[in-house]
Amino acid sequence: MKIGIIGLGLIGGSLAKDFREENLEIYGVSRQEETCINAQKRGIVDYASKDLSLIYQTDLIFICTPIAKIIPTLAAIVPHLKPETIVTDVGSVKAPLVKTCSELWTNFIGGHPMAGTAEKGLDAAQKQLFKNAPYVITPTETTPIQAIQTLENLVKKLQSVIYFASPEEHDQAVALISHLPVMISASLIKTVMGETNTQVLELAQKIASSGFKDTSRVGGGNPELGLMMAQYNRENLKQSLLDYRQILDQIINHLEQENWQALESILDFTQNSRPKFL
Ligand code: NAP
Image (tube, rainbow, N blue to C red; front, side, top):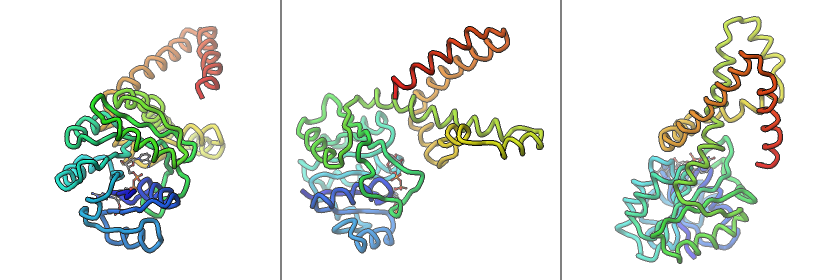
């Protein structure tokens, strides 16, 4: 089977590394000549080029570009593909992409490997990045069964844990567990940085330990990614933030009223819920 990968960065490069281990033939396309040369020299792909025509004859194509380039890339390749070629993407948001992509190409099926690091680019690519990580496949009513099965069989080779969801459900779920935490964590960092008493701020910095490291980690990540979540999953993220604000308001109320019992019952609930949820 010939696999095409467009966008040889963290995700595209990592997919290429794992699929090559499975003796699949990998055709890689990337924006920069240097990335293509590197990918081929280091044996990450069998063939590489800046030119999209390299992947026209492949059987299954992964579009692994930044989200904004996924639809334009698909639009550029569809006039040249064999009708049976399956195209998938790895974008972190699904509904806005899947709708247009499925209209452009019948054999399109959305996907989201839920693994990553804080790094980007081909140098960040690693083997087994997707092992034991969730991989959400988001077919629609019109996605051909054959395309779903072929993608599923390929994803199994990554040893990912496969889930199926509609694009809309996927986006609501990632708003809750991925996009909302980024904004909450960013708000936390901004609140701390906003402390005007420099002595207090300096002391806080000195004594900040594992709790603050845990809760600030995702807010201290790549701003491009955070912005992308907000732009492409705007409504779901907004709803999650509004729900979150309600809980914050409740907590502020309980503090003001010195309603310790109510506050305790929230904290009891969260203590019990977290291990069950995770
Ligand atoms: P990345 O490391 O920046 O890789 C993207 C690569 O695409 C770049 O290195 C660039 O390579 C190449 N590229 C950019 N524009 C292109 C174009 N027009 N045509 C061909 N290649 C192009 O980013 P990533 O983290 O792998 O993210 C890629 C996709 O995976 C995104 O859609 C993202 O939503 C999704 N995703 C990311 C994560 C994560 O945690 N990072 C997790 C799951 C899914 P050169 O400039 O070097 O050629």
